[in-house]
Length: 325
Figure 1 (cartoon, rainbow, N blue to C red):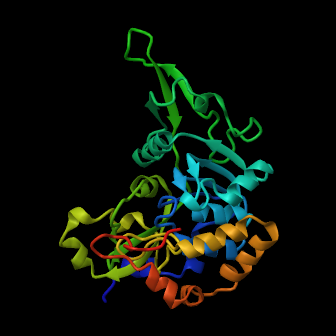
Figure 2 (figure 1 turned 90 degrees about the horizontal axis):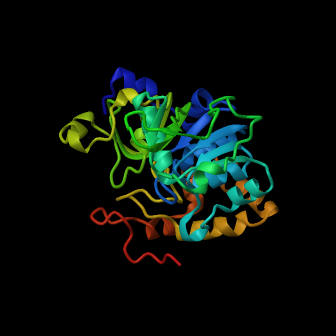
Figure 3 (figure 1 turned 30 degrees about the vertical axis):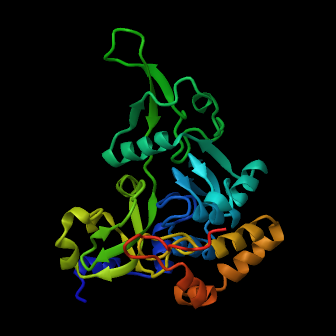
């Protein structure tokens, strides 16, 4: 395939992408949703490069969030939900780190986080909403005064103010925009010119990418740009938004990638077992994260049988008949 010169510059390994775009202390947003399209290859590489003090911003996220927190890469999290579906309704390492005071956590509603990324993508400093009025989410602040206004932490979690266009009493909630340093995404396709196409639900990936200073995309396939241009309405965002592209078949495993593979119940159960114990979790890192130099080595350890078991129907998008217990 013939790559454009700009795309040629953006093609790189996961190791190079992390070295260039994910420094210690960075604010990182994670694309995907709980057990769907987590950028797991990049998450594992961040752990291998021992990044520290990361500030995660997500709306609803699961496996990558839990793994990064468990590996000690994260000091702060802003989120609406952190869990791995039925395998861990609250992420096990996330829950333990928060209860031990090892990370700072600020929680919002899903709608709040969606609006905050939207504000960042539009270049707005804040965005008004009526969501949350009368609830604890406005009253309970997770970040203390010692960190308010530092880094990318807003001075206030949110502000309730009078609607300036209303004569009568009309309170509105003003939410601070999110502008992460880097966004990590996994997509099905990237074109040879850099165009990104996500199939199935895109969750909040578009807003997160547009709100971020840098975007790292792993993808199942690199395809001819002409192929993607034949159906431009199916494309998710243009190549100029992307800073790094890493070809990574099964790059979201053990989470799902619509039309390619389902989530891996066997692996997620294994992770849950390991995550419940500090020593066993370190064994998980040793056996499933730290020992691999390539994605191929990781997939070889997963094994052909498990990869075949989760293979998705290209029509349905998931693996019909998969034992999800």
